[in-house]
Length: 402
Ligand code: ADP
Ligand code: ASP
Ligand code: MG
Image (tube, rainbow, N blue to C red; front, side, top):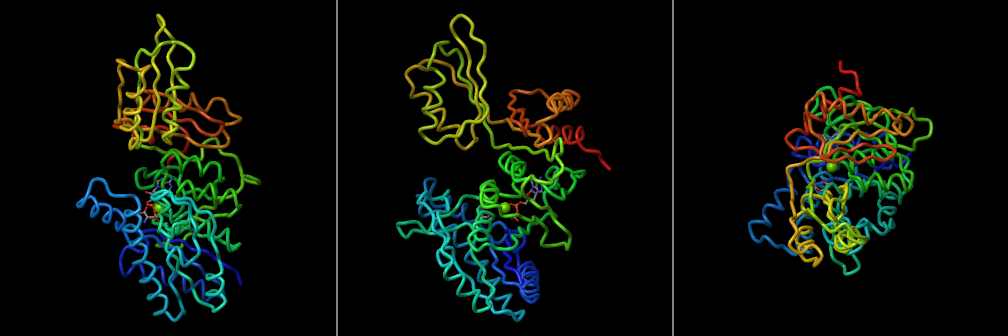
């Protein structure tokens, strides 16, 4: 007998037929003699619909109230799934995040899990119940409901698997695993049998939403092996695990992130301390800066460009306008850009990887605006309109198509 955590995303529970399908998977696992804890997301587009409802009322909703609103989505799906499992003959209880012991910090909208108090879960498992837990939510020290940020149910599942020392953690979704590129966008994308935590973390952070990046971070920290698989086909998925004994691939995946903006400050004085003043101003407001490019100085002046998430672009520009030392300088913001990245642990030891990627982009006549590299990834910033073509071209350069 094993303790298994199973997580089902929004499309896996989108309607009554899908809820029944999930109930069948869960109850089959339970009937095979396992303890089962299930995490579910809100049905289909419910979270987006709730956000739209708030926007009908105000353009400036308090984050606390947004969390109250959004957690309603998961409350619907846990109760429906519990009903469906009971129908199939397995005693099942549903628990909201706070009932399942999720304690978070009080950063509404992007809360971090501090602990999971498992007493109630243990009691329910001791009663041989299937336990269905609402993903994406917890309770902070002010007894307020919080949410973990979009895609946060993956993190709920990993946190539960770690807290309960589960034997397996399965993330069911609407594709058969992690692919070499988004399989919905690229027909030739191939399913990966396995991928390291570090590679998955890069892919998730750089745009592959199949797993939330925080969930991968947590899985690595607590050494929770993940299996990503489809709730709709009975096929083996992708294992996300430690690098030991895994063949290094030059490139494991190619991904794009359209949620980027490039900000350029033109003609800043070429003197010490400028970069410090610009970027400390942004850091103080928790604005994450990604690629940074500083031009060679000319006649005592230089340009500094950097990228931020597009939802932070306006705030970043406002902050820079408030800096005396940039008074009167031209600030340019371009949101029609995207970051395309190739990720793979093998590139650490293969210096030709970057040039191969640049060659593929050159052959597709795609202009590179900025470049960033680390041991296991190469990212380029390009025009957003070219992003899908760029992913296809880079993918073609590294993977046989057939
Ligand atoms: P869920 O609702 O189950 O959490 P998501 O929509 O968050 O599902 O994530 C699954 C989606 O991730 C897939 O439908 C697919 O389009 C997208 N995706 C992007 N990149 C990849 C990739 N490299 N491998 C698999 N899926 C990917
Ligand atoms: N329902 C939430 C969202 O849409 C959480 C999740 O799906 O993981 O972001
Ligand atoms: Mg998701």
